[in-house]
Amino acid sequence: MKLTTDMYLGNPDFDNAIFMLDVVPTTATKHLFATSEGLTPEPMDEVAWFLPAFLNPAYNLFFILAPNVGARWAISCSQVQIEGENQVVKMSETVPTGMGLNAVNMVDPTAAITLVNYLTTMETRGVGRLVLPPELS
Image (cartoon, rainbow, N blue to C red; front, side, top):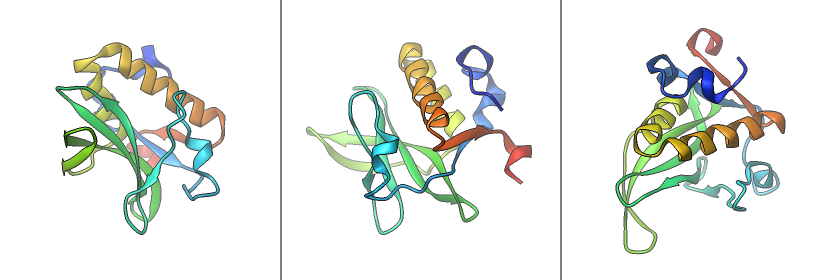
């Protein structure tokens, strides 16, 4: 599936889309996941990595990079509550990439397009690709 902003973002069917990784994040590969602001994923625990995707006083979203589709690596999303400058005090269960992007789209459509562009860049770099459920099996 080719990722384009006008084709999917905001569409309820897009909620099920998930960005499957072809590259596993490690200290040696995390530069491949760099955002335009220079942010790279950081370890969350022994396996998973996190990357702030959207930070707003009303809504915060992190990308979670982990083997969370069976044993296959993917980027899912988690809404986070932040206190102070950077203290994460609560994280939601993860949801598919598309659902997280659609949630951001409801708060800030421009930011959602920026996130889609980020994933398009990841696809171009060969890091992964956005897929819909029939393609997951």
